[in-house]
Amino acid sequence: MTMLIFIFVISIFLGVELIAKVPSQLHTPLMSGSNAISGITIVGALLATTSDSSTFATVMAVVATAAATVNVVGGYLVTDRMLAMFRKKDGSGRR
Amino acid sequence: MNFESLIDWGYIAASILFIVGLKQMNAPETARRGNAISGVGMLIAVVATLLSRGLSFEWIALGVVIGSAVGAFAAYRVRMTAMPEMVALFNGLGGLASLLVGWVEYDRNPASPFATIVAIYLTVLIGAVTFTGSVVAYARLAETVLSGKPFLFRGQQFANGLVVAALVLLGVVVCVDPANAYPYLLAAIALSLVLGVMSVVPIGGADMPVVISLLNSYSGLAAAAAGFVILNKVLIVSGSLVGASGIILTSIMCKAMNRSLGHVLFSGFGAASPAASGAGHGGVASAVTADEAYYVFEAARSVVFVPGYGMAVAQAQHTVKELGQLLEANGCEVQFAVHPVAGRMPGHMNVLLAEADVPYEQLVEMDDINPAMPAVDLAVVIGANDVVNPAARDDASSPIYGMPIINVDYARTVYVLKRSMAAGFAGLENPLFFKPNVRMLFGDAKASIQAIVAQFKG
View 1 (cartoon, rainbow over the protein chains, first blue to last red):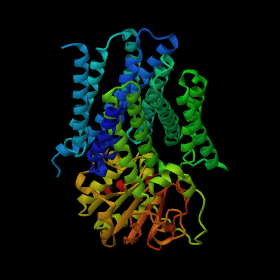
View 2 (view 1 turned 90 degrees about the vertical axis):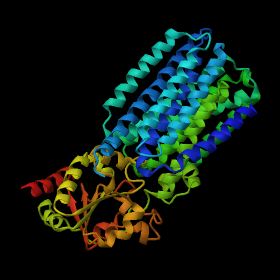
View 3 (view 1 turned 90 degrees about the horizontal axis):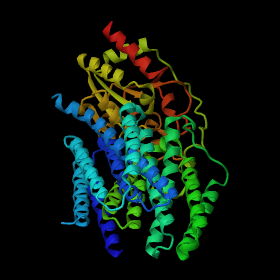
View 4 (view 1 turned 180 degrees about the vertical axis):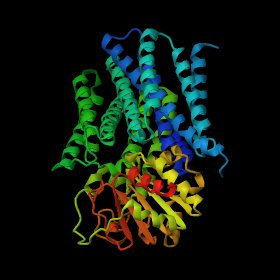
């Protein structure tokens, strides 16, 4: 458990370092992109579908899987859509 | 190599890809690749998880197929102007998933070790607050059920305090004797869902950038907490990365509104905004028509557009871009001044201007445009209000006093495109409208600009 807390603390500091310098024009894609990463809870949802579960637990696990999948798939796709617009301008050579 | 270690290596690879991906999100040139890299990380994490023993794949398939279809459909259908509510909704679903993961874990094994129970409790609490908080934020942003106005009632702070106290108490009860605590856990889940609603309803539309950032952070922390429940390192790493990034964004937004994070977290955000509805400036705002405005546009050598949420509502970004091009062709210097909290989420205006293909070099940040403002011939405020309210600079009694603003009133002429004289989301009267160099161009922003564009072409 202390090992996990160690990982948690280090990751928080790493996250702060990674994000602190993001220019404001990228704030929205950053937010929706990191939002997609928070869908990592899908791993927990998948593991919760173990076949020895009660019906109730299985139903909840399926709902959790579906919700996390929306978060992941939707989050990544929508971020990509936004960033595609940012890049389009980049390639147009108007700089 | 057995499956167990293969799974662990997969999680390590996923964590590295998330970190590299986030790193590349720092620059416009690499951001899209960064997002793709982080997506590959997610795929690896999911595939690695599927190698675990004893999963029921038919149920997984059901959940994944439904989730992918809904997620992809929503992602492709959403209009760029509706992005804030979409992100809020996705975020809420992540919170819901974490809540259910914690709940199922307790349901399966109530007599877990103390540390696991604490983690379960935190997971369902943060997950539930994220879920209902995001749904309320969605409703407010989409303005379907809730209006943008904050919803306040007497004793709100006190009620919230009671709920928090009850949650702490329930937490102690659950953690001390987890085996017999199922009803208490259910009560805690219900209260957390209520808390999510209660902590977001008092917040007005203009404060939404702070709320969305904070909820984003919560969803990451919920995932990290779920990682402590199932002892899964990839959940902890990625959850805390998101938690940290959300907190950074929150503090950037707070700075841009001159609020402390503590003020945002523990006292009514809305409390500062809705109260004072202007002591009445007594002045009369002077209006201008699009036809008259055209001559000023035509003569201007430098024009600064200041977009706000109203531009998003009117879907005016493409028309504004067209006007900008015409002005440039007319020998005018065109700039877009973007306030950090303009719109309903961090960077909202940048997304819309990017959609309309406005060149980067025309985008200027608040701190860069303000010193140059006195030399600007014409400042055009499109559906922005509080971020150009000079009361924030001059009036110490104003609720938004101290918030950095774009000093449009220092420009030679200012046009404010606005539907009517109604107060902005913060409910404040804006003394800008009554200044001698300011003219109101009433009506739909898109229609007004189209009229000016037509003049230029005609």
